Image (cartoon, rainbow, N blue to C red; front, side, top):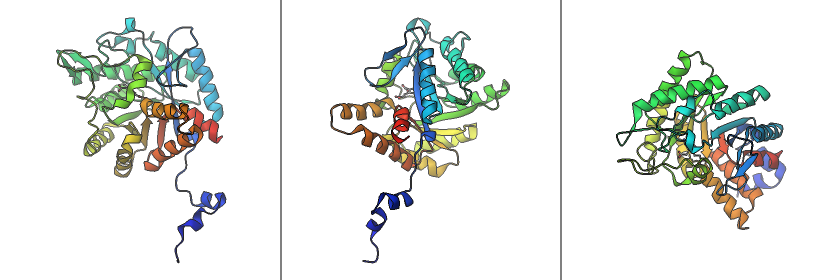
Length: 327
Ligand code: PBG
């Protein structure tokens, strides 16, 4: 035999020389759930190890992550029901605890990168990402709200905004809103190919943001999030987001959509982010808690495979643990 691929696998030193994929904490984004009030933290039963955090606990968590080499965070607000309404007005209210928390975090840790969530669902009494009008999700009316929300987030100090709503034209509406107000340096990480997935369950538990049925609208997000059967359609979304001014394109979820990550990576020049979502993390945690998989091995392999598929950035609930494990 002239060719023996096993020669390149003989020792750790040789394997290091021909390793194709590298993943370091700098590629990772840690999601954090924020809540108002003095209680330090509240566990999320369907996502063991993740919590809703007070501002004080959030600052401590960010400090630990920074020391471990994770510098980027995507923040989500757990909004009490009494602050929700049909128009999600609390999302751009200057008293919004989420906006105030972002300002406090950037004041304390100016070096960190804060990514926001731009969508109506945490603030909407209907639990939808868009405005419910006459029994429909009203696309263009939603854009006005998203644009206001985006400007409020930029003003609060977020570095990058993450539109996760899947309305048509949102990236352009947000970009124009930001530029008009002088926030030309605030970036947009667009949820380009966000699927109507069954794997967001623990996240919706964390925020109590499950969609409700209303008029002709069922209790799901299928009229705006993408059909899991579609891949070609991700190219349409990618092209639109690129033209509309996005700085990153995101695929979500990650593991069941590795082919879509690969496709976007090879079709566009923008950096690709993959969101390893709550349900995907919960599955792995459940198996590990049962003793069926080994966390220290299964978790890094999972993140590596998302990176190998083409993700430049990985948003994962395991970011801190990965940094701890490899540091
Ligand atoms: C909503 C939003 C969702 C997630 C991020 N932003 C849920 C949804 O679309 O219903 C899910 C993230 C996760 O499951 O980890 N704007």
